[in-house]
Length: 303
Image (cartoon, rainbow, N blue to C red; front, side, top):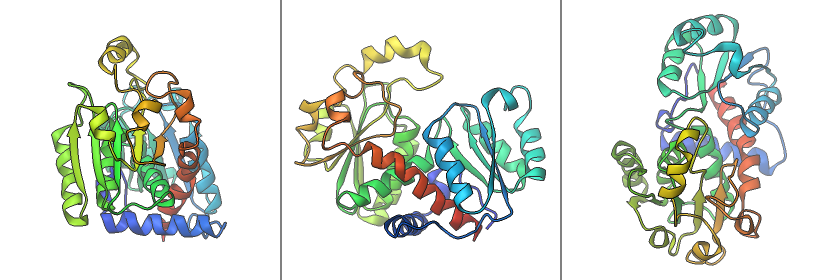
């Protein structure tokens, strides 16, 4: 299957369901997938440093019988030292799969169009599709998805965008609370709403985090200032005042609601230590599930 996954929308809701069924099954049975990548090489092109993304993808490739080659941020200079087309064209001659973690989604799209091999988005400024797969897998494990409410509090960023589409496709009611000027864009809300219309879920946006969290089964947040936004940090801290996920805010959710964060966290900013490390936190399950979800995705792509 010569297919790239650059956004969550590249997978139908049924395909996401198939991948996550597979991930749940292999994780539950404590087994690895088959040898779908036997004799194949995956090139990891990273413009951003990473802990979870790099380790989980390298392990997934290895577990499937393949070989992973990692290129650090200075080694390629995607879109600077070399054009995305040149990088994709050369990498596609050497390797069978490209896994790219980058800033600009446009560079990723151009690389994929020129490579001739499958390309997986390991993160871009527009989307974080593999994180969303791991997130929905985690929600499945902690109470299920259909008919439940997941509230995302914070910046309407790449994580929120991917989560909204993936969760809506699983029949969840998605609420996103963001301050003025940091809302999820209308195009992404519409895309998630289309998935929700077919699954029985819903998507809503609002500015009041307390209203958004009220009765929620899952409370999710992410950093207010991502890599590449450091110059905006002071302005963002001011804008997100009142959006911290603390014990008071989580107290508005359903009893026993799961607390999620894709990590790394800026402790004391978007989330407090007592919540991140507390009994309702499932963030380590999220982190582990990056491996299971990505391994299932790669196996599905190469069967």
